[in-house]
Amino acid sequence: MRVTVFGIGYVGLVQAAVLAEVGHDVVCVDVDEKKVENLKKGIIPIYEPGLTPLVEAHFKAGRLNFTTDAALGVEHGEVQFIAVGTPPDEDGSADLKYVLAVASTIAKHMESPKVIIDKSTVPVGTADKVKQKIADILAERGAAIEFDVVSNPEFLKEGAAVNDCMRPDRIIIGTYDERPQDLMRELYAPFNRNHDKVIFMDVRSAELTKYAANCMLATKISFMNEMANLAEILGADIEAVRRGIGSDPRIGYHFIYPGCGYGGSCFPKDVQALIRTSEQHDYQPAILQAVEAVNDRQKTKLPTLVDRHFNGQLAGKTFALWGLSFKPNTDDMREAPSRVLLEALWEKGAKVQAFDPEAMEETQRIYGVRDDLSLVGTKEAALKGADALIICTEWQQFKAPDFDLIKQQLGEAVIFDGRNLFEPSRMTRKGFTYYAIGRGA
Ligand code: UGA
Image (cartoon, rainbow, N blue to C red; front, top):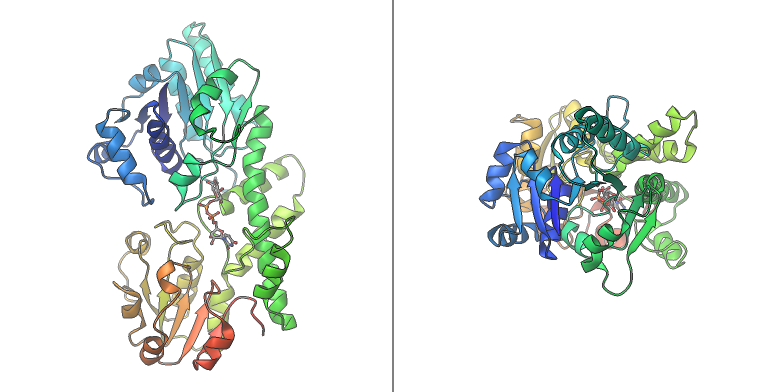
């Protein structure tokens, strides 16, 4: 099938590559000329395991193309994906200007019937706006061309995006009526391996499904962070509690790891956007507000522990920091807990020597060159001459470090672990002062 994807961001590029992989003929359109040129040379704008070889192979095979020519893109695809960003507005609601701009572009250039698919995470009611926009422009043009608008949210996780997209748990498709359903079935037929993954519903429900999924997962995390804080106060161990409740299949083991707060481009933005949507409809979403507040507080947990341990005397101290990205296997720093930590430490006059396997370039881009930040090439180099070690991201390579070396290098054998990587009793036996999340007072 001929497919066009507008927006070569995270979601758009992964989706396009995977659709090419299963045999569709895909054209990606973006306004960013540099990005398009780079992609043609095999330079991928994001770090995502498995994506580069996929893009290269299908570009070479001619199944995946990149262009800035919107008219060509509109002409190409029977289906037209809108996969552009929906950045938060000043008040936290999703800004639809890019989504609606693509809708206008499609309407201006289309000469044959099209199915327009909202892939971006958009507030409930956006498909209506897209539909209206296209209808208005076609009316202005005096063009009587049939079109359908479909809501088809994406559920991929950064760091596992290719796999998530190749093997989706479900494919949510919201339609106004039955007309586009056959085409959508055909588009996604290669992904229905053992059972039918497609779930058809109305567009508003599809739009809300996306927010409900992310907000439920964020709720699980904030809930566990709250339990972890309680465990600390009550002298219990959240790890035991986690295993204890996860064994109940109604609760499950996924997404109940406490930590230094959730980050990324999705949970914080989507929780906030659904809060704004609720408020716009005069509804106070008490659970979502609490989820957000608990997460904001949790991000201050590490800086508070550090500050308390050193009696507020952080000026002139140097901290080794392992992990900058908001989670492993990505270079993404958006809403990363490490940023709250860095900024709090700097505010108090401390210096940071940080190492991250992928996110150092991005950190440099965000903070520029500054005296109180050294980005070093290995996790061991970060320890040199530091007063303490802080861990913000659970990269695989941080999980079994050389503890003797850590002790030798640090001014004081103290570790602040925002990801519960080690056993507190073992750490005590090794002579460390070990702070973790929810693991006893
Ligand atoms: C999330 C969802 O998991 C995807 O299903 C969704 O498609 C995506 O948002 C999106 O809307 O595009 P992502 O933001 O890539 O994916 O990352 P996650 O793996 O979900 O992690 C989010 C944050 O939660 C991370 O900061 C992670 O450290 C934290 N987390 C996760 C915890 O603190 N505890 C857990 O048990 C799990």
